[in-house]
Length: 274
Ligand SMILES: [Mn+2]
Image 1 (tube, protein in one colour):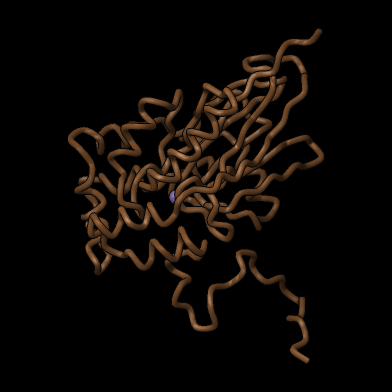
Image 2 (cartoon, rainbow, N blue to C red):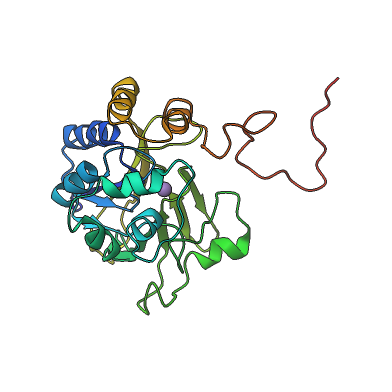
């Protein structure tokens, strides 16, 4: 008999959407999974950053820094949107939460089934450097590199991240595995909350079965929007566009409608309109 397999739930980009987080935590609990690692972006975009932080501090074994967690409580931040939404999201946080967010670790490494796993929010060098799913080879390889932000430990063979709200899974011939968890609270394209279950032998350098599963969890989007309305959250229409339709707020008013999430390939003609 081989060792029993361990399961870890990876959640990311909750963004103040407490209703979605509770639905995902219920699903994780119903599967009997007790270990939850959070890849960051607790706050901003949605109304209940404070409650999301409180719940994640209580429920998640690992909490990692996201770009919003770094920039929203930054005492040197000077920008806001015309609606004043940034100041509103910041004002929702309780005393000490901003400092807690900014002190979160950049990355988290562990062994599973003989693979060296590294988790971070956006990329290996900064929470503010975004790597989309239609990256090139250099960007792919950069995700496995050590940087001043990750430190000088052994380089990973599996990297998981969030940030783009757009989940995927990719492998190369050196067995390097890159995946994006997608977003719990603000999922693009399919707005259904999504998280990852990673299964294998935790902490083990010996090869063993290893799997990554994407789980979509429906939730009460109307209830979440009702809370945002009742709280008077700025940019309500933008929030509705994202969580009801999966359309990023920066895309919702584009002439011709929101674009496809992959860049057009050079030299490929658009489909005939005939
Ligand atoms: Mn995010």
